[in-house]
Amino acid sequence: MLASIRIIAWREWKTNYAKVLPVFFKLMTPAMSVLLFTMVFASSSNVITYKDHQYRYVEYLIPGLICVLTTAMVHLAHHSIIADKQSGIMPILITSGVSLRTYVIARSISNTFFEITRLSILFVAAIFLLKTQYFLGVQNIATLLFTLSLLSLFWYSLGILVAIFINNQSLKDLFFGFAMMIVPIASPAYFNITLAPQWIQGIAKYNPLTFSCREVRRALLDSNFTPVSTDFIILFSITFIAYALMLIFSEKLSTLLFER
Image 1 (cartoon, helix red, strand yellow):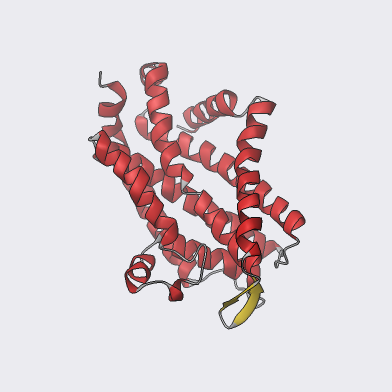
Image 2: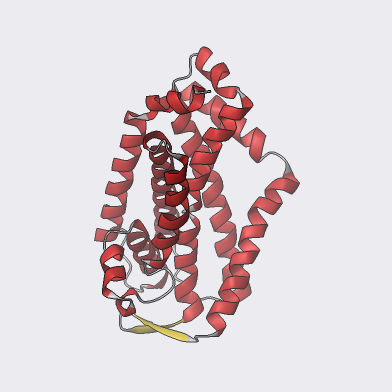
């Protein structure tokens, strides 16, 4: 199984990330657009109160934006399956003895690795270009990376589960459009969620972005930081459940991959 995962992950790397120029644009285009958005957005507000402390708004905003960017994994999971179906690679993998469970594990690992690399570059660029002040100890950085990895895996698992259980393309478009638009708004990614309407606060209580935003800000802004928190445990738990469900039902992908 490990050999199969390594082969699929290597193919993913060679197909999408081995060429320097395309990778540069994949990394820099969203990074620069987010940085510009942050600079414009933050110019309208200088400070924000968070946990009884005042911070520069840009220092509050960047952790939220980085967490929001991981939601792209939902679209990536679904579209990568469609791309493999159209390329005809799946019959080759299956006849070579690779299970669909192994396939989704390899794809999730390789895509999460690239996503964390992209977000790390964005974060470093934000520190230098926007002159942000964060706590950057070993435990802080480790918590940041692990939290973003968990969040990326959660969204990837969700994308696969949507592909498995929603057969109607209109419903899929509705989910990828409207539902994923609501997720960043109903979270503390951009603003103090306690100032939002009650119905948004209600959604935010169960939103994975809420747990991840609080955890990332805790790691970067809290002077009394400790490695494990309730938010981290909740995020780990829901990611574990989503990933386990993805693996349990992964064989159902055959319907999507091999249908005419």
